[in-house]
Length: 610
Image (cartoon, rainbow, N blue to C red; front, side, top):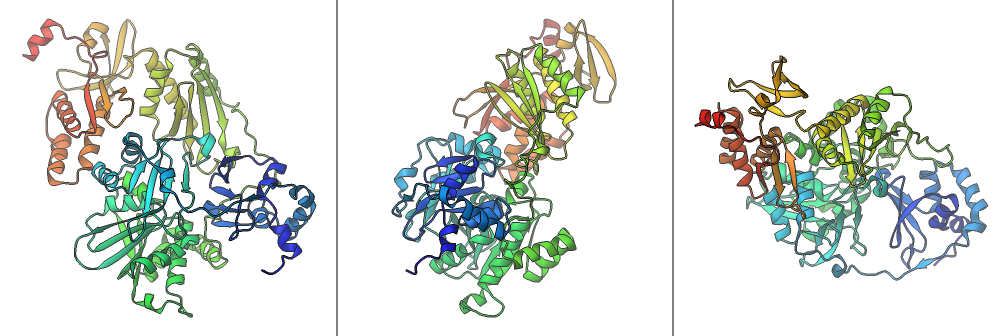
């Protein structure tokens, strides 16, 4: 081996020691360090014969390398500035501990699952909206399992059906620990290089097709949306985009050349550049190291332009997709992106920048972003004062000033439960109400509402105030149904209650008269839930669950049932009864009227019903 130059020695100094000296926070995961402010940036502190210095990889930016590369990418330093920094810090960095290890093979025993898969299945079906039957088949075939900590494990199998690696996907959200993504995401230690999660679905038509995705969830989402596609189909995850093209080459070498290669990466800058790179690497314009790949037809598959990836399309039940040649794909992207954005992406591609690098990067040389409490809004103080009546505390953080979250969120409202008797009811109502406005993370001590980008924080504050009012007075917000078929919502209670009907007319009722017309709340018990805890649901929740169950069945009978449920004339009681029957037969959840909130009928009402 050639002797290292002084430049090499400087560039290959310890990244971990640099982080410690500069006070850059990180989470330790064995030999790996994951930066807290950019959870997709991982440092590998191992020093091996094949990798004789510490390295980093920044997944979202598709960059990596040694300490010099780290200064250029993470600190935004110019080349000359980076070398000066390396020379200046060399005496201190020389004190770094060297983690010299032998390369260890993958050990499946370290990634064993357990018999129950409730949390993992709940994540795939409830959060990711995959078909329950598909999820059940994945577990049955050993392609997916739940680890002891509740995380998902996607198993990698070789040609001999031996497990050679896997992806770990977290199932619980923790923004403080895992940053903007909120969940754990990693490749199992020792997994073979240039490989990934894959599965096949064949119909015997003979045409061999290889579909390529950025993640296992995307591959499964695509198959969930388009199971009817013809051919002997294989679906593979790259665990990335433009920098992981060697995985496609390795897979083709092991499993043979397909008739059609379908590149189906994310509908963003990194996905666009990744698909272009796959085309140029596998079928280059000039030099041709793999002439046998010329006969392979390459197509570019994408969901509708409004969706970032296939799982977003699945959640919206969008079956729209395009499958285009390279020429049509480029024309499509020019139109959807606009000429300026398209030219910028092509420039980045030619420059070897394959990630979403057009997004702003962090710079430790800039002043730290202000993480101040919101002070300017009287509506926040008004809601905070209201919650104080039940001991709860409300604060707000302006996330537009925090580079970690500015791309996805505007504000975060933190509610400290402080042992309030009304907190649990408030949290459940918020969980049902603010899904389109904010994302909720919660525990027994309190909750945080992460307000999405371009959403009005005032609307979220109104929902908090409304949820608090309902928690204090359970009648508020309850639905009523009159004998003449008119439906409405209780908007005020007291000696006289006020109902706002669906035609916007208001009418007063005394409490006893109103009780007779309440639509009961429901208890929902999710069979996949470890705790089997009951949660209250509204009539609209029950209808939504029934429609979701029918949509996931993908058969003619379910379609007819949905048409009956949604369009057939019937009373509210009959419609709810039918919805409950659909859910209770699904083996997914159980729904019953909540005895704590159902109003006992008096004798006259019972007589009228008879």
